[in-house]
Image (cartoon, rainbow, N blue to C red; front, side):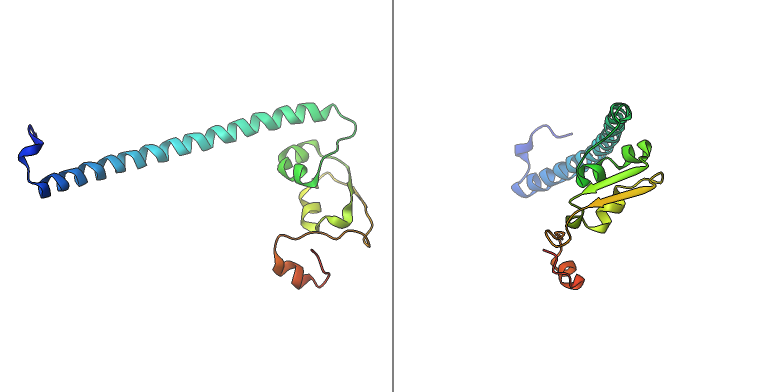
Length: 137
């Protein structure tokens, strides 16, 4: 037990400070990891509740419209809804992967509307645009 820190030499005080900080840091890191896991669990639970609410509302609709990005973000809801027909407007702008992400196992028909001469899909990766040889933006 230390009663007077000033009785230590500067070097001893620095060593003691380093020792205390290292132990505090380890405890804080352990606590942070635990809180991070709790937060991740809470976020998953919240997302599940939000999806349940979205599903309950959307089940009442005859027609549902959303962007391909919105549908990709609601994949669990789309799968639960199980639409038999999916209509994709401005389809010439949409990459195939985005179309597939918006289908459910219950999908029987996909109707794609768009002018392939007008707007092309936009890729996020230049390499994909170059490799496609279709001059995607």
